[in-house]
Length: 283
Image (cartoon, rainbow, N blue to C red):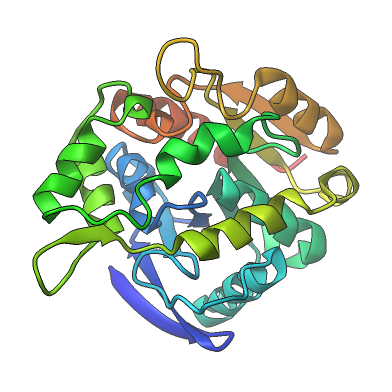
């Protein structure tokens, strides 16, 4: 299941979950890793479908160059991966930042994409999106006494809404590296991800979205991203506006927030919506 591949001058790590057609290639959020889709796999996405989830550059076990975190560079990495997989057009999907990258690839290389699966991303995120995701980014660069201490801190994160299970633990174990002295810290670089988020938010999404003709499912998680009263990362209005802008978009609301939609019982609702979309005939 664990694979490495040389593409676009770097080494990418990805997980290849066996299953039936069509092939789904999934890309994670800004500071996440390929294991963020483990909850969907556990809920039956694989073996129903073959699922390839990739560590984007700068995250997980993929190479971490000091710069080169534009949407174009991320896209060239994924196109190299698709070339290596040797398939025709794929079902391309992503969560948050990975959803924006899916939009970008479909708009610029439409021949590579048959359908899009967008998990809690929109052409316009919440106006305070940098502030909302900051608690998730705060773990980057922090050194904790041990891996266990790192996991304990993540377990208490308010945006997890008290949820903790095997899928989340696997995701955070993939997120952390143990230093020679036994201390632990996140694998991702704060500087790299700061570059990535600014580049993503700077893309002309209102111009790109109308160019996407593929059937697109946008799954939206309405819960707040944090303590009570915190708004969602993607407000419902922005999600609906994105779907209206897409020539062939469909909106489905799923339970949970920006993170918890991917795990536990919430993941089952996501898998059901994805399965219905992929079983529907092309319009």
